[in-house]
Length: 431
Image 1 (cartoon, rainbow, N blue to C red):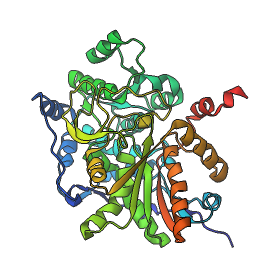
Image 2: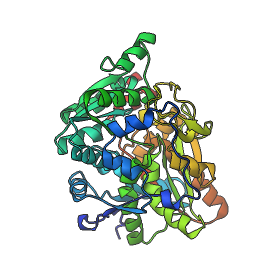
Image 3: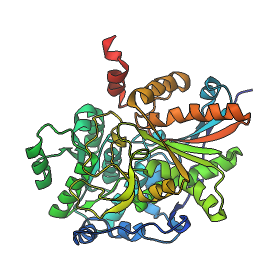
Image 4: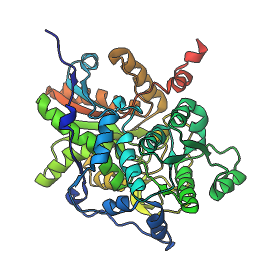
């Protein structure tokens, strides 16, 4: 008898609400700070009005606009859950692995889930254009597609090292008619200042954020933020809301929910709808584990304090785990993990011990990506590959306890546009 490995949610059963974790946090989220006295004023100018309103909403569930829902369906939602049966066998059969496959969206990652909402709300404000930053290019690709679908121009400031290391991500954005600029760039005053100090800088997400904000501020556009803030996480919870329905249909209740953290929105989007139920009951049974890159150890070596989300210190300070807004990370290929801080809501949950953190090197993560590709057939994004080593840890714990465990994984994106990066690290070019 054939064993089912794919579990789909019909399009007519797509969730119609986003989940907001703010009402269910164990304590109030520390409020943003504005030491310069200018940051809040800037945000009021550059952020879409509705996004800023929802950022501080205390409503648990937010109705998704019909225009956004329709485009969710257009770009591949709901995404399937895939059971990784062969990987289970490889790990000894001690765990069951279910993967929420955000790689099945049209741009190949979870990023489109919030890009559609941000761009839609910018369109409601009659914005001339939208601007944003991108590291690996997945967020930039999502904003480019969302802008094309809502018929508005996009300006994407792509971290310089990724701009050259990931040309196919750039080409994808350009296919959607986005203007892509290597950051730091000559298009903003701040970018020119950074280049004057260090013409060979690899750039960083913090720098790219500053450029995108300045560009919107100075040219009459709206800035769309791709991670960290609560509104962005909320928009992405469409994935977690779907997964809850799918796991109920499957008849499984995960013991672990794992994923990777760049800024935190991918992992939080899957985990929060599940975690919120537990927080309301006052007891957290599941284990929540998030991983990142050891080259950017914000979760394992960062400090929980107020810091700026961007390098130019344009935006308000947020309390979060951080290794410093001026940190320039090594030019690793998992560009989406090169951000210096963790989303404030996720940081609070880590500080309270509710979410655990792990870090893995690029070499270890990429070795797991190659192994996973051979066993399961689907090539993960470099970022996504950093979650895979957690599975071995869980399998070893299950073996010791003698109790089989169920794991839900946020499979945040595919690596089909990152093969050259894998080739460099894994040595394919030497063969």
